[in-house]
Figure (tube, rainbow, N blue to C red):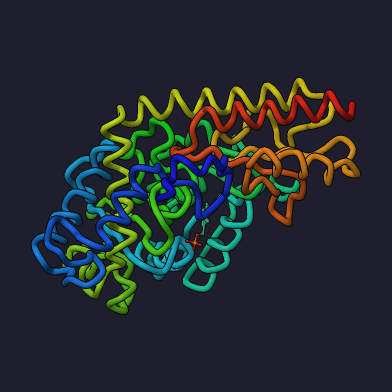
Length: 362
Ligand SMILES: *Cc1c(COP(=O)(O)O)cnc(C)c1O
């Protein structure tokens, strides 16, 4: 049988992204025989005690990996990170209040669009003037805001917040593409959300960690399915949860913890980022697309000095079994996503391809 290890593809996909081979194997096994039940995970009740164990472990792994205090509740819901663009203002923006947003790219823009429909929304800073190639800094944050929404990592443009705004205003963060990739103090945020499919698991589940004391204050009559408090009360099982994506996310978090947790992965991710950015800066045929101090450790965007050579480079990396390197259509060029499960060896292999390309064409 073909195993995942035997298929040596270097997977730089931006999302859904790479998952650890051993997690995929365990997930495949659970589809046939879950927990020794001789039943598939896909054909048992989400209220069975075997599945409740999965939910409990998933929740406690999130709390542990983010270092969250007891006032935080963890949810796994459907609808993607995009549904959170609406649920966040719906649950946190008072009918008379104002929310603040920082616009750092496509996803932040979409979040702002939804918030404006729900209530007063103020964009405090934006990097749209330079095509989202940097992170705005030094902007004023009015202390009267109900919350400030930021995006920690901009998956498409390849920028990342290296530090977070210092403010008394509750911080809400879209961490979809760099959750669990580096040390953050989860307690600095009133709410963190992340679609699973970038750095946590497969598509279909979104993790929300929320400080419960911030909820129930909007003065809005709430629809049940959009109300965090309803989902908290139902332990993420108010309706049938996305059982399989939650299970695989739990396995991925368990993998992370068993290998040394956030300190381990942060160091490894730093090595991966250093290796490729060093090559981009050294190689005469490539250049980075973002401000150096704001470069993402997860999504590395770069372009060719001579774009007419792109087909030659494409052939080289495709022949070397690399996948998912083409840039987003808004940026062009290339994007190498270095999510947690990507081994350092894959980055080293890409660097070798870039060096071989330079030897041939520079
Ligand atoms: C991918 C992504 C989203 C959208 O996620 P969906 O699950 O497709 O809704 C939102 N924010 C960020 C930062 C992303 O990378």
